Image (cartoon, rainbow, N blue to C red):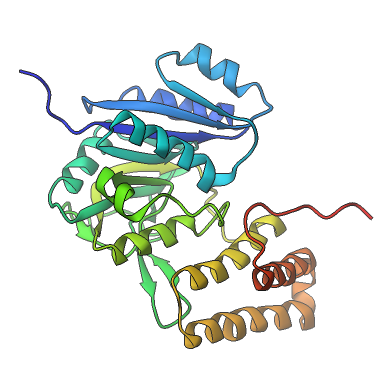
Length: 310
């Protein structure tokens, strides 16, 4: 009897991350789902990734971008490929992850549970502490600037989430299964974001289009994110600041949300980093935050344009 499982294109974006990507692909080789294709999208790597990946995994489809297009545009290349192939689903998967053999089976089962389900996310754990949850989906605080709160973050998995898929507001782009119908109706990732917040905006757009988003607790993925990932580089802080404002713009947030983000969050942070001696080491982050707000006001999106050296 012919297999009738929905087809899935697993999209792994690589940018100078050969070691992690090889480990990710080795993990995917053990997946027990019967109808999936691995698509590696290389974002202009300069570390020899393309040749090494082609040699180690000739069975994977390898797409070469000429430059680093960022998370959104890079993954969109893979999503367009999945659409052209007629795949029923596409799965975005960070290259610094490893997966349980049945993770895809669990995610597809959740997605197939209802016509209304458009996206599914797994339980994502810290790779360095395999029973510690990083995210189990997220909730959006609509009254305070569209802030996202990750469910069960930094808690040990003791079975408290159960086994049944459950609705959430958002799931992380680190591992996100999306139905073809959603891609055709709601569109792809918004490339203005470049990196960060694009998955949140995508989820909210999907919800506006009438799709449900589920977290599948039994689907398990391990992410090589540091256990203490709260401090970020000036460059990351730029994108997190600017793209939060872009999220407000893209989702047509009201004045209360704009005021909360700009005053209660950003102005308060800038004053603290300026006036309190213990935050003087944040000088670079402060400068990037100011630049991010200015760029958002000018409508400068996409990749951060590096300032010329003085």
